Image 1 (cartoon, one colour):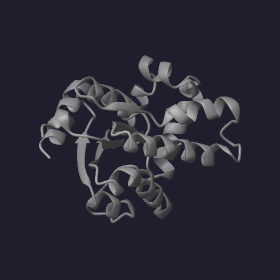
Image 2 (cartoon, rainbow, N blue to C red):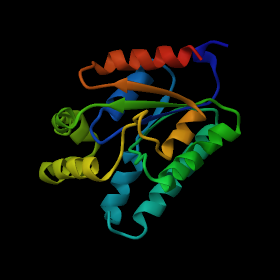
Image 3 (tube, rainbow, N blue to C red):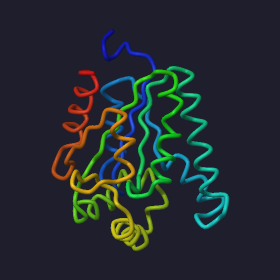
Image 4 (spheres, rainbow, N blue to C red):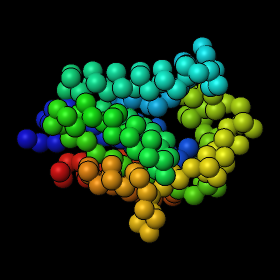
Length: 200
């Protein structure tokens, strides 16, 4: 069975804020029949209605994401999901394991692509027009730049072979491709991802 004929499949693109997850995800979808599900597809409406500090924000976001992944797996959809993942937290590893379970339990392929880039690169990308158009919560640049810096200081969002992390066990269970996205054209990165997926 060729790459384009495979049934349902899940590709999780993860990395720190403004690393290029949405842009690369879109480019992968343009080159295949994957459909794009952004983490901000649940964040933005819930922020608009409830606000980030609401006690229902995180539970609802997690529930909506899980249900969309469940129905996508049941429908045989090839789905790209973007995710900011704090790799040092066991509860985050548990969350990701639960999120991908509908595909994994159905015997459908699950793969992870990790994008990495330094903070300065990501601060520039944080001001990109496409990002601000798709993510209204990022348009307050003073807040969003502080958010990028704070996430960098408080979270571990990139793997390091020399530093064991709870996320390692999750990634070891699936295919995992790490790409330095710092100076790369999104199309070239997407070509690499599609070729990697096709070589399964």
